[in-house]
Image (tube, rainbow, N blue to C red; front, top):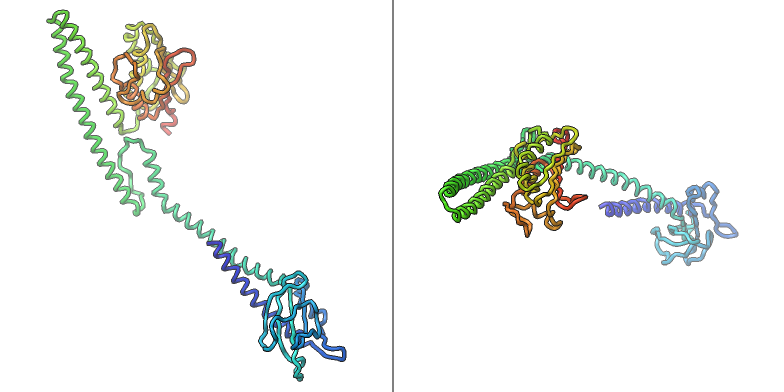
Length: 439
């Protein structure tokens, strides 16, 4: 667009300048003709210095003139001017471009009587270099283009500001939606929303409502399913205990296997219920949880399990209080799954360390001396029901999935690392600082 504008502006400037200077050059030709005199030596032009200065534009241009007969014989003036290209058989002025002494010039030609009372016709040619003409073209060009460029830039800025200002509500709406957690389906407030995007907000709120209803139905289904599964499992356990009391040795072994399977079913149902609750969290965690106290309680709960395998289970608190914002029951479940995994997968006589660092940011580290997790498996172990090939420990495959789900709902980061000094697995959970969560 600017290129087209510049092209048109330059051609307009050239047309105006050429028209103006051609008229001036024609006047100069008439001025030279008016000062022609004839004596015994021939025809001469009486051009005082003041007149020549005007014709040369105060020395900005070179000026040439020439007087010719109709037969193109030079009678007076500059011999370096080229002769007319065509026959001079009309009184209509003619203009053309030429080169004189290596300079571009504009030539005007007229035919008129030598004197008013004379019938002798002569041809007068005047030529001037193009310095002043080009200077005028540039001035006109700039006077047209510069304001247009400024106006164009102002227009672009105004349009950009207008578009940005018009899109600001949509941008703010987009940011608000992006900052929400995947489970926050509360309606978007539209009291101060521009009327143009109210239908969009209402449509989004309607969608949120439908999704929320669907998730509530799913939550009720999971809760009911868990309850329905727990009831027969509890009854089955009661029958198993009764069978043990009345059965002989061989049948007692069968009952033991059934009991172990029942335990796995109960553990699986419990894990699924925890996952469902964690993944469908609605509100922002609001409890003030002290990680030292919570980790100490979890470690104490698993002391007996560790002792049965002769595993040394140590807890290392931070020197200062380490507080995070979260759901205490879910955080307890997360740490319990993590420490339970470490104890379960560590061979007899091993070591498990639970360490809290106040930060910021707060960190909980669980390190064991078990077989470790291969690097290529570390992403997949957080998938539900996934278990590393060759694992001999009984389990549901939900432990680390629960850890990851609860960590996500608390905006915490879970990392699987290699211990620096021993073999095994090091799990580090980094929480957002309390100050960052409340700001």
